[in-house]
Image (tube, rainbow, N blue to C red):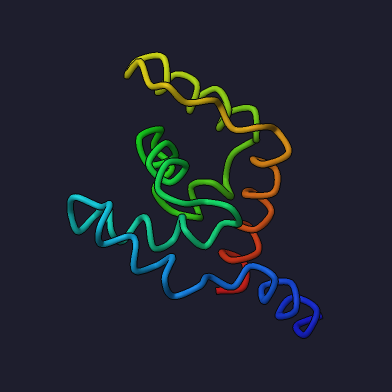
Length: 108
């Protein structure tokens, strides 16, 4: 079981250059710490990390603890309130992020 999980995580290994981007796009120490976790999610870079952060999902445990519909609603509210030219994450994307977040938080 442990080997299967390790193989699963290898699929989502974060490239060092992706993590180096965090210092360029983050404005404070709290955001940098949060982005280091959020960037572990597949496909997450600055825009999606910032959207999750603004919606209150600052760490993997936050994402692992909610239903996909709640994340979609909360991110949609941030987009409306801040009048951002962004799209709400797709249900499939959010489900993947929740699954990966649960795996990381469960096995840490």
